Image (tube, rainbow, N blue to C red; front, side, top):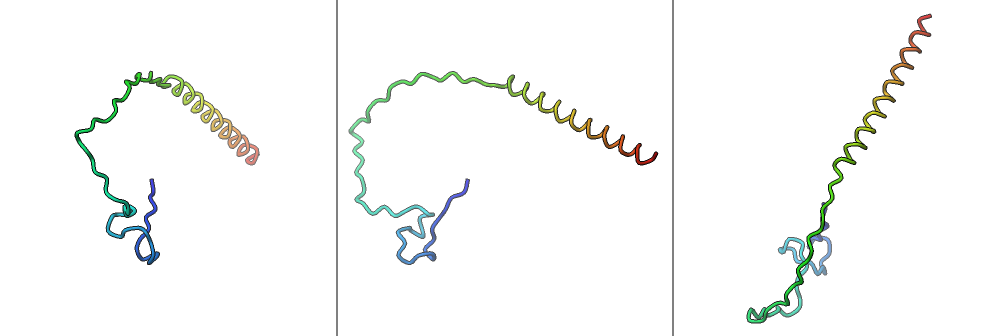
Length: 88
């Protein structure tokens, strides 16, 4: 995955910091984190049923492989027939 990073040489009035690895400068006041406050509890989420389509994928792949093999076989037969006709 590519990331676009603005460097200081591209624009002198850039709001990007050249020493922060491409992250924009934080110009607001720093947030004070009060550890005495508890974060709201999250609801328990139901685990999603993961469906693997391995068998379906295998069937489709086998069909695809068969179609490719059949096509190559037909092309090979045509090539051999054309060679035979050229020899005669």
